[in-house]
Length: 343
Ligand SMILES: *Cc1c(COP(=O)(O)O)cnc(C)c1O
Image 1: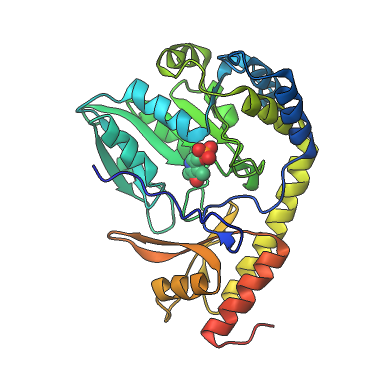
Image 2: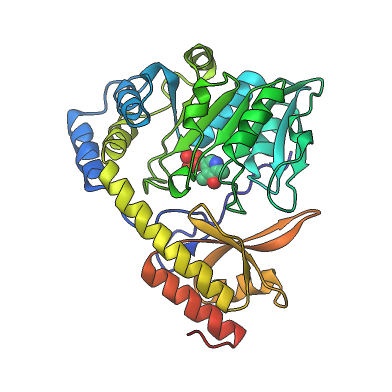
């Protein structure tokens, strides 16, 4: 198999990193305090296998019971647990395209097939996404989607879940930056599950913490296939403090959305076509400038963005929303590369 290629992570601080949708701002100070305290308590004992303190805190935030939550070592771990539980060798995993490339790799690891359903031109999903197929065991849908930053409506998701013969995971890695989410749909249809991560909106990509929201009977069975201690003591302490600081989250998200709006407008001014984004990144293409050389020219200027090329769909640049100053640097550099003036 090919294996998944993550975005470049240059070790050393010289780059402006706008390629893997990390948060440009430091996390809540409460997280640092909680991690230091956990460290001071010592690491000789195993952590709580179910990360109970986090489940209780997240349950309060989402207004559900803790037994609807399963914690993971990043939400990629949640995706792995789900694939391991539902998709056996010879089975089928469904995903939309263009979308998160990791899903395909997870199917391959299981010795399973994956089926890619192309988004419609308006970023809705065609009815084939809900079609019954023998061996179809699980469907993944990122919402907001990556790399487009677009969303499928709640009504459409309820309808898909109704028709699908298998569970549907809504990957809400970017939902905190969006105008709506699907957490409350989990109670309406047991086939609907939602995954979240602390990597993006909570600025904790380095901590590795994510979670799943699903009906309790499903969580109960998923526990059987996870690593016993999939989350460590420090990450449980940090993640609990993070989710308890909803004020930090609200302020951070407001800042990123404001920068996203300025970035979208300025890229359009530079001649790019930019999709309106509900996430902390934007997808853009240029009518006359090929994306790959632009990516290379930016990298040459120590600015990393993500160049994506999807077979049968096309290529473009996915640019994470950075801090205000990173955003300015990006736009000035792009203007210089393109030889155009920015207002
Ligand atoms: C970033 C991302 C994830 C993974 O997040 P981690 O919690 O860091 O593993 C999952 N799904 C999508 C669509 C993402 O972009």
